[in-house]
Length: 117
Length: 114
Image 1 (cartoon, each protein chain N blue to C red):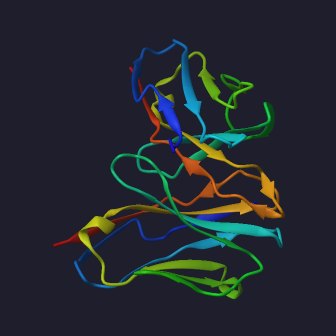
Image 2: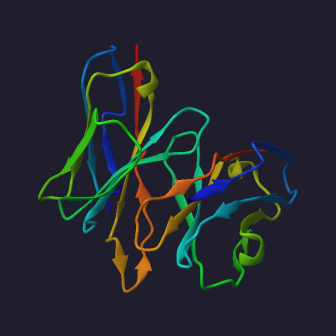
């Protein structure tokens, strides 16, 4: 079975531009979350979507937005890019938010490395 | 507020040594989950273990073992007889209640030298 797939793997953008990152979850998984990992730090939560609805949002500016499609794939959009947006963007999928009272584990893709110049 | 602290930024040991990675967490919830993930150079976070706040039993999986102590808010990870393939960055993470949001520590870079 395919794992979580993200595209593109690498991306270079100029300050002020806009970028769209894509994520396909594991088949059967309905929850997708996005994380930003700046070099040398742990991942920071950006968004969670479940059944096409936003279920959680981290402390990120409105320049960051996301959506989930009927097939449960997801896009993360970042507008007006800043140098500080350079990071590894990770997508995680999970079966659900809860399954029989158990917080289900998240499975991560290999990420999209975004460089803003 | 949730917080995860991994005080060890980098650890370097010789192959076959045992090594313990420390994790201390803060949460106000009584129901929470703790996780360990491994991040090899490829970047993907590999799930290792999930532990809920009501289960303080230690767990062993092959050369890996985890020690969960609520009294000290710690969830430490030990690798026995380390191997070069264990070299990676290891993250401890916390999730509260019904949320899927993971709060990660800063990570510990583990280097196993042959």
